[in-house]
Length: 131
Image 1 (tube, helix red, strand yellow):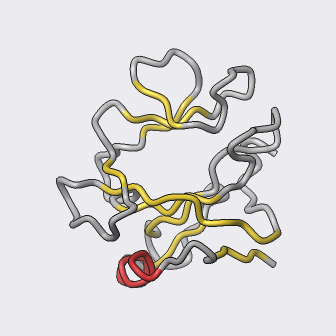
Image 2 (spheres, one colour):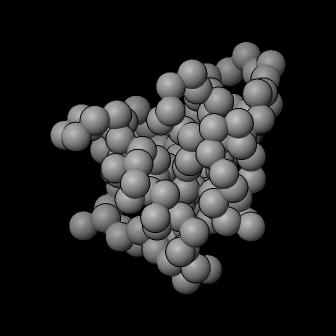
């Protein structure tokens, strides 16, 4: 459910990688750079709900190009994507944690070194399993 702060249980496909080219090296040939106007729509009333969108965007969204390092490297899952169901929840990302033991808003937070190690080793059959 959108905004519940929970990570949905299940097996989720890995569908992409985003990275800040001004902060980290391209981790894999499939990775796409996060550009200054990149946002992620989290407004279930919009047709582009749970999709990457571009600023300006007047509806509810999350900035992908953050001032902090949280989204320097992001692994995208297929949670409620590509055909999002209204209010089912948007974007379960795998990204770096803020600090040990600090929760995310439903995403998966990893140590930066672990995230950097895992990302180039992802295969088309790689999955995130949440029990």
